Image (cartoon, rainbow, N blue to C red; front, side, top):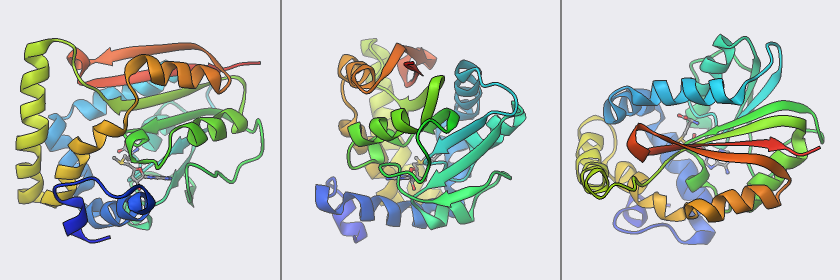
Length: 234
Ligand SMILES: C[S@@+](CC[C@H](N)C(=O)[O-])C[C@H]1O[C@@H](n2cnc3c(N)ncnc32)[C@H](O)[C@@H]1O
């Protein structure tokens, strides 16, 4: 998939997986610095909150789906768990900055036995998958009963003023920062890709129908990010 196809439009569904993979391969070397820059370091706080709310047991095997360069795995290790990272992009895995074991694989078809994991995290990746329901079905299959899933994602703030300011920043300023430090087309795609996210209740309902209970959504930093926590039913 060429840069031209990302620019100005979202990829065709049949090409999304390859487009996303190629794009992350390309932006991997500067991915971490861009995250810190465009979120003013808030992403570090959101990841800590994600692991805190997952409430993992020390020593537990936690899968970080779409682990990218490993920030969530690092936070999971700091919480004394045993994380495993899985990602589609070899480029992102080559820039991995933690010590967890890694799998180059697809979130929609994961190489784990049924009920074999003590927790799953997934940061800023949901909107990059070609479909969300098969991902939730896979997570439901591989999690042990009673263990938790934590999904961290961007969100649209409800407050009209925050929403306007955020939209301007995300859609206009972030691509400029991307152009200077990394890749303009990729950082144009990232804000646009939020259209792939189901609306609030739809996503919560989807999680519930795939075998989870106690599903709750937390708004982070005025609602510019969201954290969804769910417990695998018995
Ligand atoms: C925005 S990055 C997030 C990386 C990391 N989770 C973080 O919090 O920084 C999205 C990641 O999702 C990965 N990804 C996209 N589609 C995937 C899939 N189907 N299976 C596994 N990983 C995927 C990309 O390669 C990329 O590393």
